[in-house]
Image (cartoon, rainbow, N blue to C red; front, side, top):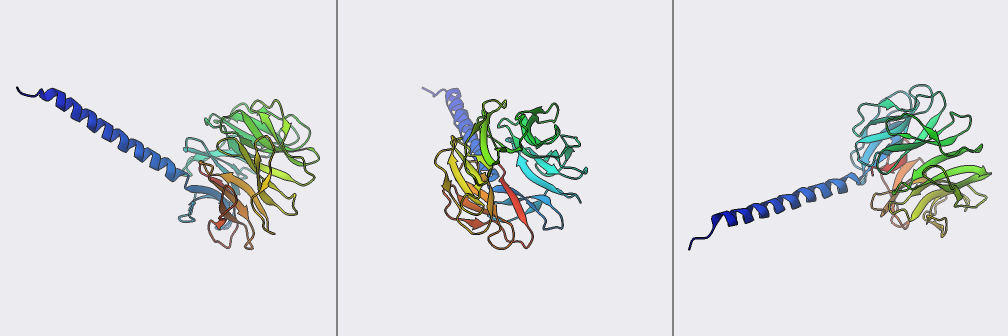
Length: 298
């Protein structure tokens, strides 16, 4: 009795489909892995402050902006397609957006007040930033295309340096409402502000970990600026760096295993990488210019 050829052809097609599906998804996983091996930073290595991207091993730095004004504080959208950044090219600091390759640079805020420090909501639909448009620095949120910014903090003190939690429910930020710079957290709509640090020294530049359980931050509570990490409720602060130089502005890798930060421990400001527990601290690249404001691409 002859075997039904159609049946085996169908099985062969199914196996081929499964093989192609696995190969496709393996490539996608590799692509995502490669994305988190890149770091943005600001550098004046070409004469003025511009935004660069570099591999996490320090190789292949690429300049993304090229403007006689300063460009700073790159922040990649969650989908990897857009970069929000700060620029002074129109006379004052504004929030701009560009494609991930540096093309199509556009002013989002268009306001006479200074505005800086963009941070993306995890779905890419909104951006928080600092603005002095109402007379003092406050944290605002706007749609990713720029319209209708809303004041979230509404406090006479200085509020800035926002960082979204990955689930989009919380925003950590720095404020001077208690005198010294402290770290607070609030709900995404600006409600329920809660103080996380309580120290006469400066605590600032918070960064939520990818899983939302920790916040890395900068503090000079031990005499000079160092990188610390604490639980998301403000408990269990732990010092990660211990150097007489300035260590500041932490940024997490997407998988939470690494932290990149800026330090002048070798004489000028450079970007460094360490494990999330503070071990294995390495310089990203060596350049006589300043390299600072490092941030992981994801």
